Image 1 (cartoon, rainbow over the protein chains, first blue to last red):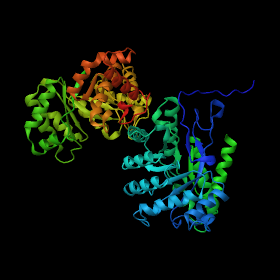
Image 2: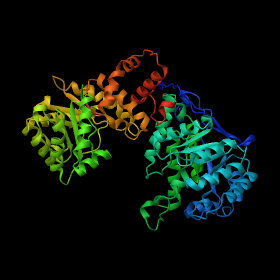
Image 3: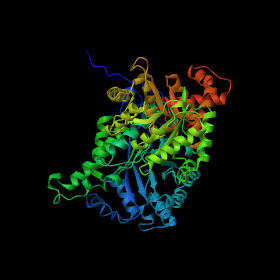
Image 4: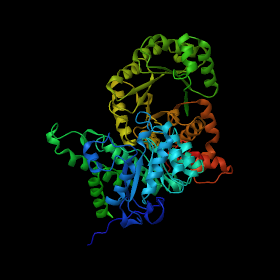
Amino acid sequence: MAFTPSKETYSGKVYPVTIGTGEQAVTLGGENVLAFHAFEGATPNRPVIAYEIQDVPPADWPENVRKPFEAVSSDPVTWAKYCQNELKASAIALRLIGTHPDRENRSAEDAAKTVKDVLAAISVPLIILGSNHAEKDSTVLVAAAEAAKDKNCIIGKAQEANYKTITAAAMANNHKLVAMSELDINLSKQLNILITQMGFEKERLITDPMCSALGYGLEYTYSVMERIRLAALTQNDMTMQPPMLGDVGMYVWKVKETQAPESDLPLWGPAEERGIAWEAATATALLISGSELLIMRHPKAVEAVMKTIEELV
Amino acid sequence: MLIIGEKLSIIAKRVREAMMKKDKGPIQEIATRQWKEGSGIIDANIGPAEDGGEDMMQWMVTTIQEVVQLPVCLDTTNASAIEAGLKVHNNEWGRPLINSTSNDPERFSILELAAKYNSQVIGLTVGKGGLPADAEERCAIAAEIMGRAMEYGVPLEDLYLDPLVLQIATSQDHARHVIKAISMFQEMNDPPMKTVVGLSNISNGCPKHIRPILNKYYFIMLMNAGLTSAIADSHEMAEALNEKKLIDDVLAGKEIDDAKKMAEISKTIDVIMGNTLYAHSYLEM
């Protein structure tokens, strides 16, 4: 007897969210099944991987992930073009890390200029991220959102402490919005409710339940994402139906396993290969748990994950 | 339904200050109010009470029983404070209740005290390890506690099983596991085991205005599962009993006239049963 897979049907579906403008615009989400369960329903859009760049040179990135961008990363515009033209990125995530008060403390105006310059140089969608300093982000992201007006970017991340200003800025300038809470499904839902109660459409949200790297709490992120997706699909919980973001690169490339040289830990093998594998494994896990949008760093890790997606769809 | 009035707890600022100053006024006022509101036992929660716990418990028990003709629930982790309280407890108003023993070997001595002083005792279904995952684990621990109680000479009729209510804001699944545990506990003996919950913990961490709503509806659902007693706000529980019919109607799938109340009850039931994901604003959705 032939094998027939048992099929689940769900009452809910993930909102399709389109980012960017023109021919290069991409859509995430839209499925009414768990990740890659194409045999059970509709999976109209593939997960999207955005290349991470930043407004200041990546001096804090480990050498092995800095190297592929060595020639371009001194300038965000060159860096963005390289990702779009050479690496064929389908989206780019610009992290305005240089605005952090403990870093270069760049001003909101400087950040806005960087956003404008990058947008002028690329045609793929742009994700604009602050430095995760709740207070500074509420000025930086407002200026950035204005600078990117009508470019249909994703702005983020709105958190409990600053969601009001960032949401208002995303709304006024026609952007999508990342809502981030810290690994707590109930607070994630609450933040989405608060944001939509301001009049922001739930179909324009992206949920970030907070990423973590393999070996450093990935199972928590995985579980929260999985439960969010089950609430969206099985309970038709509209507050949990936005696509989910896995901000992978930032979390992966700061753990010991992606940094320690082989000379220190010979049993761990070559550091470069290890770092790439770490990023790819973390990203793949989050895709399986339901993430539709990943932000990643190393081109080889991206390539590996793209290949996995290709095999799974 | 036995309500164990929860208000005399060291967590409340006014109570704590009165305890520190040995000021009988507020303690007796709160105890009397809870008695009038229908409490059948007055809980005296003095916290871990590592220093001077014996004195404090004796003072609480005598202070309460001076004005209220009810037994006291001796609520502390300090076993010698419990023993001190049992020594002065006036059993004329009913037998005392100890809160609590558990499946943690460090808490077994509590059973000795219960047997020695002919006291009733709460058995909290947790062990030395982590929290019980579901109703079944709670039952497995309950069975251990029951066996231990018999071994120490505490009759099962004097044991109240407590499935441990957790916060719905962070441990939503446990709300329904606890309801199931309450009905399963009763099956573990004939006559059925008595049960108790620390009710208000369900809404701990929730916005102030939804706390009574969760407390009341959860209480009715537990009552329907066979709950025999609750450490709770006696005023809130009296209100809950007045609203019981409405809640039962919604639980039975009937429409009730007050649409707002209907929505409030059904959304709360859905959150308790895990049909919708809890968020602080769940009533607004």
